[in-house]
Amino acid sequence: MDATEGGSALADRLRPSRVLSKTKPVWVTILVLSGLLNFVIHLSEVRAYLNHNDFRLYYAGAQVGLRYGWSHIYDINLHQAAVAALLPAGPWYALLTPAPITWLVAPLTVFGYPAAGSALGSPQRPV
Image (cartoon, rainbow, N blue to C red; front, side, top):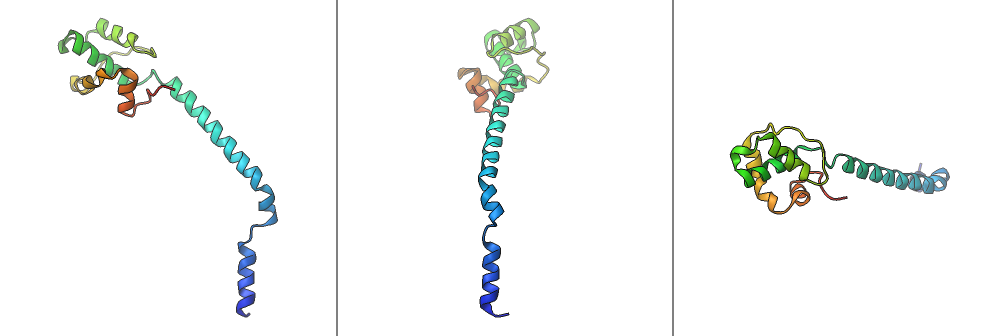
């Protein structure tokens, strides 16, 4: 086998097959549609869990601490009211975390709830 035969055999292998060239638009369409579907599902999941995260509780605890004093962050009535005031509203769970977490979140209350969550990478980004 001389070099030209080996070279043409390699070139034949590297050329796209006729089947692939005819089905390529179909595969590209499937890929684009799959990507769009994935994006839509992701947005719906983010919206569904926008108000179901722990950061919401930390933020409300920080607000209570700043308004009423840090000794009141575990006051159920104050914490419930603070969580209910956050938009989007979500279910209330008792703040069971140590106080230093609310202390760390306290400076972020200046920016508001959605912006504070975005600063930490939480899924509170407005959609």
